Length: 165
Length: 70
Image 1 (spheres, rainbow over the protein chains, first blue to last red):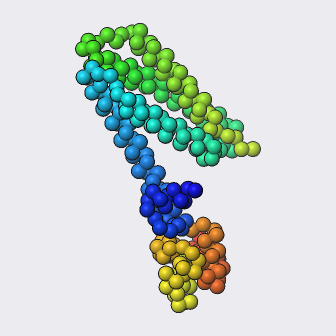
Image 2 (image 1 turned 120 degrees about the vertical axis):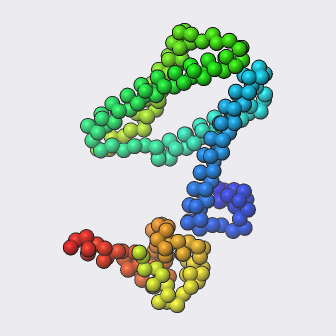
Image 3 (image 1 turned 135 degrees about the vertical axis):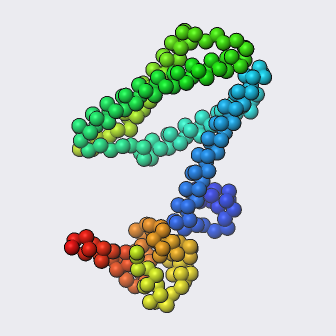
């Protein structure tokens, strides 16, 4: 099924061998990642203009958003199912060191994300309304959001660690 | 460096002939001979069979190992 799909999409008349398959998967993987990044940048730029022109986002904007989220979700689920994202650790001490490192990374990530979102949303709000109304309450809300984000990232990262006896 | 090219030439085969006999492309044989692609174990066995030899002879870098020991 997968081979047939590749042959049809890439226009091959016969099946490829293992080396060619490896190259094809690499090319498709890299271009897929680049395409995803480009579409995310495109969405960000469009969001800027939507706010600047004070218009509502059109249906295709939501369609691209759903497509990108689905793409990211499918990749995450498939990586988890195939267990390639699992990090094996061979001692309890190493596990504790990595867990501690991950905890600080999550705290840093949460704060950074919260501040970034606060600045970005404040900027978009300024573009849309023409006045800057973001204050302490918004900062608190986004930092709480950052704490939630950091916590979820910590547990997500922790679930990938496995101690091998 | 593996000895696929040496044994292929010893048997009077071209890259295309060897590729055809084991069911891969000529490009794959070329990349294996240049050490630019690590073939699967199954493909290594097929190459060894086609060249009437074994995996050690084709892929084991004995000289380098001896150097390391010395």
